[in-house]
Each structure stands twice: as structure tokens, then as C-alpha cells.
Amino acid sequence: MAKQCAICGKKSRLVWRLVKLRGKYNPTIKRRVYPNLQWVRIPPNVKKESYRKFAGKRILACTKCIKALSKRK
Image (cartoon, rainbow, N blue to C red; front, side):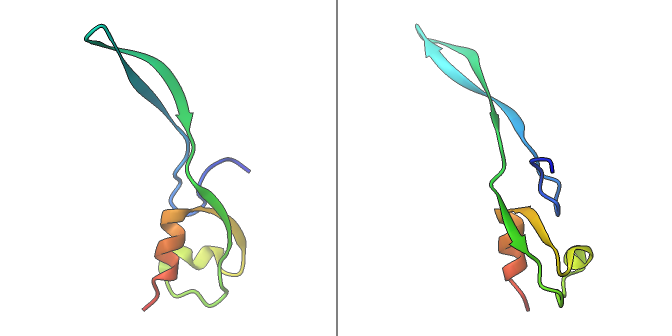
């Protein structure tokens, strides 16, 4: 399974860190930033439309989607 959120599709991205050297910025350091993915079990009686296809399953989801899942009306 890829390091990607099953709900929103959020995945890793490449970021550059700007290092200041003698008054100028030197964009030298590149690193990969991964989303905060957690295993979560989606309840079988979920009401939100975007989560229905995952009902009753255990998936990798980003924390933003998990937070939205807990906000039920």
C-alpha cells in the first residue's frame, strides 16, 4: 500500500529549505515530507457520502480526514 491517504489522496511532496549564507538565500536542502497517515476503521453505518465506499473497512487516512470523520451531525 502506498504512503497516500485513501480518502483525499494526499501523498508525499518535496520541500526545499532555504539556508541563508552570507546574506543570500541558498536553496540547497531538499527533503521529502510525508503526510501524517494513521490506520483507522471506518464504521459500517457512516453517513458522510465520501466515506461510504470505505464503510466497515480499515484504511490509511490522513489526520485531517480522521478529524472530519469524527465530526458527525
